[in-house]
Length: 362
Image 1 (cartoon, helix red, strand yellow):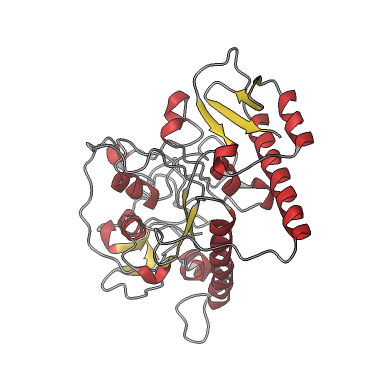
Image 2: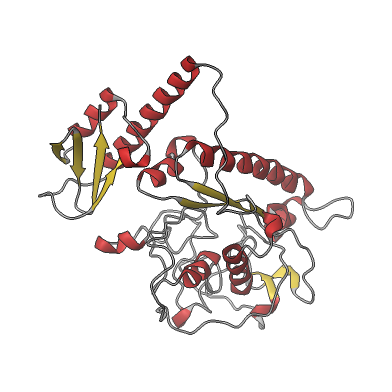
């Protein structure tokens, strides 16, 4: 899938040919990314899947001309946001991130990834201290060349309208979810960022791809590519060229096109939670939250490796996050997976090599 596939293309100056930038302190302490091939920095490289881009001509315009696994000729839009936030290096993929490197951020995006209700990413992020979370809407998937080649168009449309109609319904629901999460999680600010729907591409090439395509609309390995790549919208059948990615990243970062940002003022007063209909409803909702919190913690712990000793790491106190307690039975399960546990003032502290979870139990 691709967001902002048909976007207003601007001629942008390409960045330096090095992957390290000279910056002051980053504007945020860390940056974690979840997504699909539009954000994937190479997590699929060693997976048994055709959804990977670790071969030429991918990466031809990336610093060093190396195919890192990004589904473009150069940087993706996450890379541009990383630069604008002031990080010294691009956020590393989960597949290679190590040690204290993860404290600055990890990119978990994976090509062909989907959405599963049980992943609970938003809650996991919140429990780990995230308070500013940007949620990107789907772009005009029906306007990607891969979809057009597959389904065709009708009634004089330039895109596959039935797909874009489904995208619109999804994004409308996503905006509602963003509002709900901001109200339900104390101190959090979720922001929806939509893709521009402009079809005014000026003189840009929008009816063909820059690289030659395989049957699955990815680039043919080691084949030739177009000249003047900055004038093309599409790199392959689904993914934009670097110049479009840079524009998308800058637009998302600046919020200059407020038509596609929700809420309009992300730093404005927080919405108030609507009153519950009864005390019973409030109690059952709290119980559900407590159970979900515990289950998410358990899942995170289960995926971690137990340390040989308790040291370092980041301490997270759920009580300070507004979570007053978690389900007792589920919390006891946290102690059964090999972590080092200590109890201080009624708080159980579970530690792994790089991360410590403080879980208040009453």
